[in-house]
Length: 160
Image (spheres, rainbow, N blue to C red):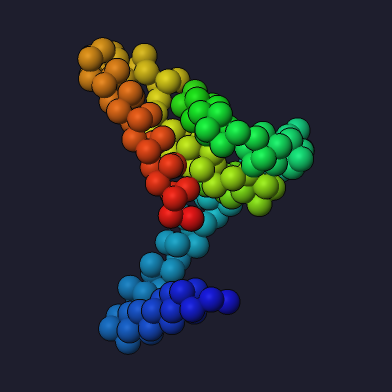
């Protein structure tokens, strides 16, 4: 384990013991609530693992590496950004999926472009956004989100 993980475990353990000392009953009640929430989420977590496995089954790691890792960085980033813009996935599914793509050999810039456009740009939800907020707002928000998502991806590429 790295120092960051060990630090988080230490802080969590310390906070837990302080909570126990301060009010044992509230601590145990919150643990029961957390257990119930975990029971409700376990199906979604299994679904996420299943979906990631399904995607990686149909898209072999070699294809991911060739398209998102070894090809022209700019073109693969643009393709990833456009695919992310039209894809509708919850963020809690997207983050592990993008991690799997990077593990399979995708470059970080296209992966970040996919992730940021997926969470920031809403082509699929555009009609609803247009209806609720108006055409000008919806267009401006989506265009600026796409541009900034692309800039974020490039900045992460420079940092990494």
